[in-house]
Image (cartoon, rainbow, N blue to C red):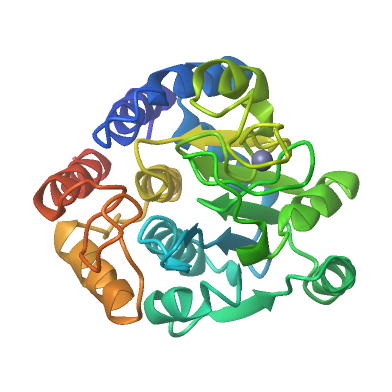
Length: 309
Ligand SMILES: [Zn+2]
């Protein structure tokens, strides 16, 4: 595909991916800040980075899973994006390893039955040890984080409402900091600014996101995540951002992009059956960030349509 055509599709995909259908009212600001860092459509920038840094036989870590407070189960945003991206990578000969923690394990497992999953530890020292071991054993080329909590300046984790969830989260920030120290590429997808990798736009998050600079928990340092990423993708939901990357990667590699609304509903139903809930309604229903099923399916079909047009 000609570069011009690729750019045009990249912009169209970003426009769909970044639609603020969950009505958080901050997505536009976060999106603009992230584009300011790369001066390119975000999903395309991320896909190009992945293509540049990987070869057949390489391994990519995909980190996902965000807990819903009070229900203490994994939300529906994240794991579907992770599996769609993983399948795209697998189809060009790249191995993938999912990383999540104990709380989100069953939900991640439900959508990725054939992909190996690492249960990342909660305890600090064990997490650091595990990080070194994972890098040594698998030598990953790229790390991709999709809707994964990111710690703030005090290494505390928060919901968008500014509430503390540190006791529910394995500190996967260590994976990103290790990657950055050793020159391994990091890609992140977020939708609120409290996710791993959003440190790249921390000033915008602190300024515009409710609780960005001051949380509701005693730590008082806000929900803004501090760990940055090489390319940050902002979506209306993080799943859409991950689909956008997979769609752009398919365009770059001349593959059909297969994830459509029907497949989306299948994935979401598997998550619900494994105990996952929608993060906004906190109900066991195939919504994503409060976006009802038919609307979410429309967005997924639109990404599919642009990729396959
Ligand atoms: Zn706090």
